[in-house]
Image (cartoon, rainbow, N blue to C red; front, side, top):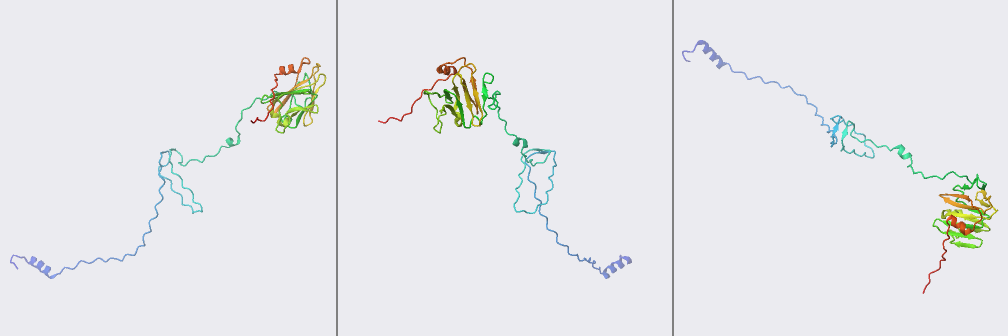
Length: 282
């Protein structure tokens, strides 16, 4: 040992050589209890369909999706994404409801001019100067036959402007036959008969009587009336079809006039009759 070492220093060095350092205590590790396994992460929620439009006034975050319903037999159709602009309301379009008034009310039809009021066959018994006109209803104008008794001549004009005259001496002009091979207007047993089943073919007609004798008109339903001229002239009754109704009017004549003059006054001109013949062969 060196001589300049102090007794205290020597003691410290001696103790260092004699005392061995103890190892550092090892920390006791407590046993860790086994932790349960972490739950599986939940399936991510279906993201809402992207909106391709602009929404003003509504919530910026999508509403929470309701719980999925139980699967049914028929799968529901998926909703289409919004493609329009929504202002302050839900993005789903409202269901259109049919209008009740539009379905119940029929379309309006244009009104046609109606004829002036006229007496009916039930209200008239004699056509004279005071009541010269009578109008039949659609049923009386289309069923059965119109029978005029006491007529000596009848004149007709069809919708095709075919005109003819029938008298006791024969027929002048063009006769008109119906699909049943019967004349549209002609004589039968002394009475002039108009087939009302084909009344749509007639345009107007004239019934000429004998001076001093009335004309009688009879309908299928039993209604009847007469036409008499108080002046002594032969009674003349004109017939005119207006739509589905027939009108009969007593025409005032000053005196007895020839038949040809009467036809000229009413504008009747007989249509030349052409007899149909088979084509000639060489």
